[in-house]
Length: 569
Image (cartoon, rainbow, N blue to C red; front, top):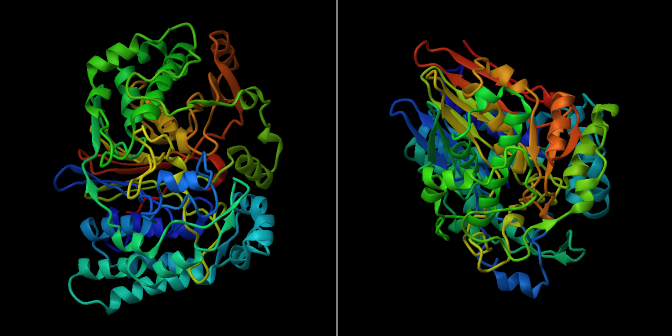
């Protein structure tokens, strides 16, 4: 797209649709995709919601009638309205220059002719292939038998779906924008929505052990429309960061910055015990507030101004003991859901897997098993004019819901992130967006560069990206790749956003490249350190534009050997 004269929005859309083919275990058309866009002409940042709401039939009463205490992570019951296609079309319509057919073409061709199977994907598919064969014949029809590494994997039904979108755009009249909307409506107001609604009416087994039909209907598709919103922003030591509103977990990144501003991290030293301890304790406080307060602001009064205020940060900062780890979940505002946190002491004490002793395929399967869920992907783009995109596509995972026949993709399971406590801000309600973990990032660094960045990783997204950002700002790392490659750690102290929503108080997962002495010192302060593979935490990527020089940069994590960075002259 860039080589042909397109801009960052065009490039991001082409990448986003290609990812739906190339990483079907990480995202798909039935999922969601929050997007941040920096518009060079106005220096303004826009947030595209990209998170679909609960169906009209998804009520607390409906869950009680089915005996549901936690919304399951698989099957049909947790489906929200697919928002990814709408989000990409909204980005293209508002900020791009190309047609929908043009940005779909690479993905359509990959799906039609197939792409070479690669070890990470094959490992994940091997883990769930028995379920495909036993329970999900529509998924088995595409993915079984499993191609060997390097052999082509095609999805003719998905290619046909992309063709339908392009055809609807070509057949429509009017402006470029109107034609894009016509292509978009082929899903939301066309036969595909009817097909999905019909397929979901057949009950299938989920994690509850029972079979449940879905609540999503064609009318939910017709009623849906994504939005362009004001992002949330905060300054930090000469930098400025933009995140999505609190229907995402994005503000937790900014809360961590507000708390860290009161500590001299640079004086503590990059990678030192003191610096890491302070960050860990700050993260616990910020994520506790996420659990208590964050929700769809159309349905809940989220006290974001207070949560990001200097006065509130000063009060919360006093809770940080510089020498001792806290094992408590301590929100400063709001309320935790009834029964929170759901503590999992057995998991907290479990011996770590030693993935470095495994091959690539086994390592991927071990990662899938340990997560108990699918993951996410990420793409960023920048063009020579200084437009930037950060997008975090996810959901619609082939591992958690069967493929809809004739379409080549499943629905998502994001409603598992709702709680069923009616008094909580993130309680399930029709038309409401669940508080998602998806969290793209944009920033202006102290040296003036604009940078789009992000990572897959659920609850860890705003921890791994914070390591990257702090290296750039507090510790003076100029090279994006160096900041991405640095070893990271993250907390598992707060309840997971994914079923079964367990917390592991005091647990810190650390890449083993962190100095052994530092990890041992963290343990003496009360942290329960779980050592992980040396290159196992996230896949942070970044693209930057320097307005002073016009230089564009890109960097991507080598972790799992599937990300890439590319520059076009």
